[in-house]
Image (spheres, rainbow, N blue to C red):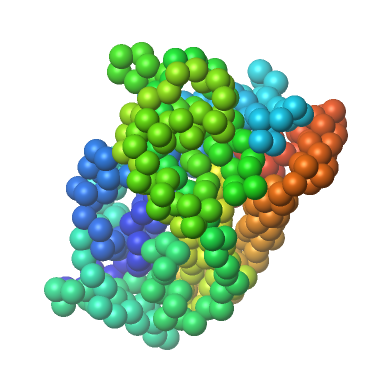
Length: 404
């Protein structure tokens, strides 16, 4: 007997998994397919990255029932401090006490653990992993995927959530605007003698941002932060080969004594940085979410949050279609999702790319102009409020799942 479901979600990462859970809360069943082994994805040391979860994204996690599981593992971001190469002219973003935080920092491993645990308990999610997808088919009346073991999964709508190299997107022939920044992000965890005071530091250098992101204290009370250091691609191999002592010396050069004495608490990893965006995110019985549709520079920490806004919008559109008795793969249903997400994704992608280029201009004159602009923003309360609302993800036309 065929187990045909509402959704065929190809890609079980943070966005795909959240989509399956959010859809289930609205009564939508799904096949969730991923090539990676869940045990390896949640293994200690597999992924040292951390994610800034905006206020709106936290509301989504709360609505899908993850608040209790995740709450103990998140570190509040009380403020964001922006500097140009440690020079004078610091720009501070700190909400009023009644406005809450600017977000929360989570280790990606903790997000995965919470999502996997919830998915295992959800009867409306049929989770297939680790498996290879041999072929995808989108017909007039439904979609299907054939797995490596010959299993055929059927549904009304296919969703590409595989990430930047999305096979679903490539097979459908979506045109991408893309370029390589020729930069690489170095990722590691730091222990430090001074408290971070829940401040996220963004220090800009011509090669890219140097970000210090507040994490919860370690088991012995040691203060901790996540480091995302952008280096030129030609220097990346050399930086990775540095001894721990030499690496920390280079880190200290770029941040001074902000956090006191430093030690590493994790291995170092890196990944290349690029821009890719497709204005068209739907095709016949196919919708794209997350990095399958838009991959950006981590300069503002908005990549995952943008994908979670995709999730909220798509689930709301599909829930409305379900209540009206419409086919979930109907072209007008998908067009509504595409139109809803077009402006937001374009604005966020454009803003992060512009920041990358503006702060990448070398020279004293460029630095002076940037710091003059930062000083102007620092003195303008409505501009600061605008940027804080953008960071918290609470501006624009929000889906219900991302509202309080």
